[in-house]
Image (cartoon, rainbow, N blue to C red):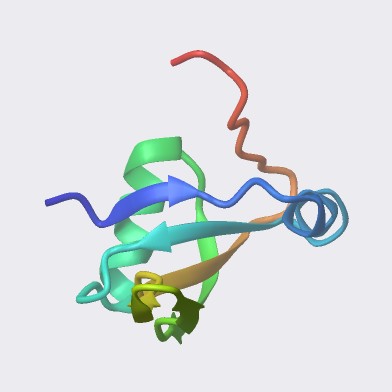
Length: 96
């Protein structure tokens, strides 16, 4: 299984990448910082200076319907913020 699942392309992460050279990824929950660093370096050909990770738990929701109470939850995921060396950039929009 791949360590990197998908990049995070939001308005906030785009601003972070332009100002601070930081990029966000949804990663495998069992991956550690060294594995994430190696995967980003081999996939995008950049040198990574720092990796920060965050675990997000599921958000639980309850609906009241005429058939009864419905319980549900969203998926849990792990997010990684990667700092890339100065002068290097990752282009997510280039067709590889």
